[in-house]
Amino acid sequence: MDAEIKNFIKVWITAKPSHLCYCYYIVAKIPRGMIRLLFLLPIFYLFTMPPCNLNSFHLGGSTAFFLGWLGNFKLLLFAFDQGPLSPPLPKLLHFISIACLPIKLKQDPPPNTKNNKSPSHKNTPKSHNPTKVPRSMLLVIKTLFLAMIICAYDYRPNLHSYVILILYCCNTYIVGEIILALAAAPVQAIFGFEIEP
Image 1 (cartoon, rainbow, N blue to C red):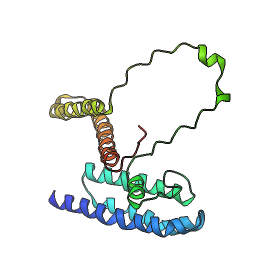
Image 2: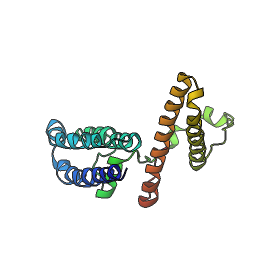
Image 3: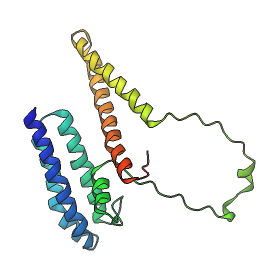
Image 4: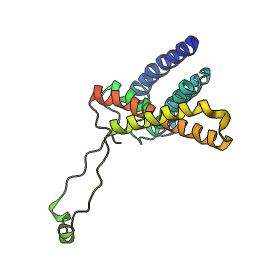
């Protein structure tokens, strides 16, 4: 397990900052389109291959998701001046965190004009909105469900194979949700981003 954690750290240290600095300082200066995409091809390869060195499901799966899926697709959109990385962000750390992590900056709503008001909108009664559960409470509930699923694995010999398959699917979903929430929280705290849910 020590070798796996060392590989995990090595993948994240070598893969992210240096390659995204190249994207921020050099590729961003290249005109959008196929030429920029051509300059990003080595980065796509470097984001796809390192997660293959990780053998554990949780470390390898999350790294493949963040690097191979999110990172590559955000850079693909960046090649054509689309997505959250365009226009280029003012700070390198903002660029790196948005490129690596499953966060999207909250857009300011367009200002309301006086001409947009309709009289029918004023007369409609307010509908009852259900109370929203805070995200931190949802994270606690998901963690408790994950603990129950892990405890249920002790009874695998007594469970039907379809029930075990459902438990594996729920485990994968809940672990993914927890990882996404835990990845976005520090960025919001450190950089003060307003993040869309």
